[in-house]
Length: 400
Image (cartoon, rainbow, N blue to C red):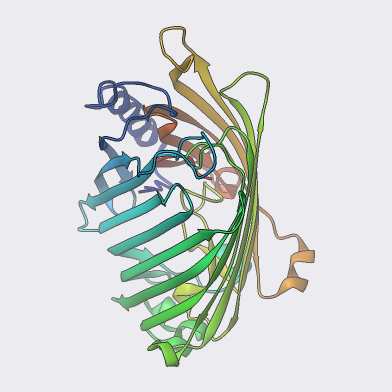
């Protein structure tokens, strides 16, 4: 549910930001949905937290984002051969509707079964919205957007499930499937003239299958205070699987979390690389931007065969003597990032860097699970005549 509100006037962004904070504090069920605030509680009931926030973009006008976080604990409650509790499984649902008729919907599952020996994840996304395509490469993304140069209407669907079986306390492996579909209509003359778009056309259906390796020592996946997480996966797409294009996607994601003194003060960082080989269609190229990587850029503005980014965050949760955990529901995050895109690995030496930075507010709606509101800035902040052009993001759980 990351609603990126880029390039809006400062007063509109501040209004959205302040209104969202008010909604978080007044959120129904956020203070009473659970009987305890401890993540180790043996509470097996289903917890549901609703969420709603306003938004604005120049292209879509006003929009409303509505969602819910659901969590539950599976049985057995304890990990095999350990007294450690199995963490709560989560389902997040969110959608948005704008004054231009743009519709987006997302369902995300993170679940832990058989005493955490089996983990099942799934992400399902539907979009029917006005969008923009700048072309392929760093230089293409620097061009201004416009109705005659970058605009088109996008209809897309993506379904990515994976199941991982535990081989050791920290290592898990398993299969993954990716089904994605994109159709471009109302294509602008600028996009229609793009050679890469012409090669693959407006409509692409791709089906992929592959393998995932994970190394995970995090204490809680949704909001880690300590530990290391590595996800390495490869997915192969092709006509044999019923898709339109033959290509492969490699993805490596490294994350680390380091406690700073007391509980609730954490330094977190992540490094990720994603690259494609073969006939990767324009909609499935590696892209920067959005609410979970280099915040401050519109998703898809910068795309190419390869993408890499680095993010560091300082996460601070205030203390409270009134709560079992000793921590307040309120906190903040400071973050900084750099990213880049390239045609192949040799291009990374040119250091075409896209910086991003910002701050965010956190409100704990369920044990160790936050709603986040982030205010982020990218390169446009430095180059625009208007020196206040942030992006605003609303979502459940942390960015990584």
